Amino acid sequence: MLTSIRSLMAASALAGVLFTAAPAFADEAAPPSDFTITGSAAIVSQYRFRGLAQSDNKPAIQGAITLSHSSGFYISTWGSSASAGTAPINIGGTEIDVYGGYTHTFSDAGVTVDGGVYGYLYPGATAGNYYELYGSVAKTFGPATGKVGVYFAPAQKVFNFNWTSPTRSNTYVYGELSSGIPGTPITLHSHLGYTGGGFDWGKAYLDYNVGASVKWKALTLDASLVGTNVSKANINTGFGCANNVACITAFDRMSKTVGVVSLTASF
Image 1 (tube, rainbow, N blue to C red):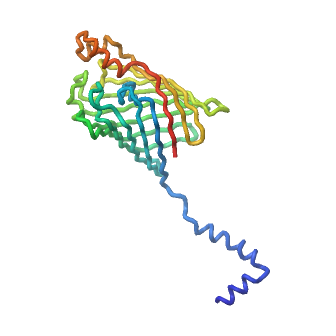
Image 2 (image 1 turned 60 degrees about the vertical axis):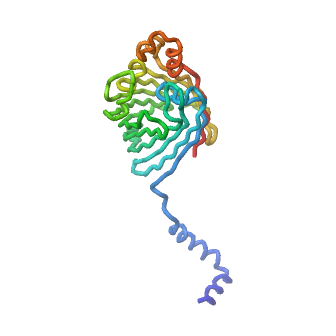
Image 3 (image 1 turned 120 degrees about the vertical axis):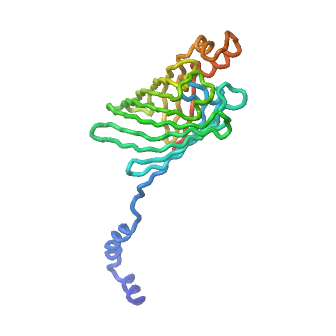
């Protein structure tokens, strides 16, 4: 056997033998996995969630990782540093979100549907963890994408705490529009949402976000204007500040319009 192999290596037909053997090596290669892992890490000038400050208007560090299956099912976790101490919104210094669901794109129609369960965990807070059910539909129009969606938080312990509404559930509906500028790495985006129920902020309120992002390789730089339609008068009555300037100022600072800058690295 060894002699035969040596003879083949010495033969002038070696190149042809190797060529015909190449497909066998290719066939032995492992097939692509049905699972995909993606992630990101970000630095933000402040963390805003549905228009409200979650890091006491201070910088935050965030990260995410997602495991997706070719069938459309996925599970993900996302985390951020957050506010604590005497901040009007005190979520214990850390937020960890765990969520999973199913997404599918109808390529011919340019429509993507998504839905699942989203859990919010606050290890250092006493205000309580909670979960929401979510669903969305997105449609592409050339370089633009429009999206509408809803998050619903059923009755749960988090609503035992002293929010500004006695409602035992919460509904958040939103719409988004984004578009890349052809021939550039720039994307423009906008978001409008409505919170109604147990997570009211002085009242049922609107939040908005408009901005632009620039992508370079795995990095994305974003600058956005983020805010709500909650006024100081809403704060005064909704939080029972009784015209106390310090009280009004503290809660108003959480919801007033600000500029937010972020740098995200994706992998």
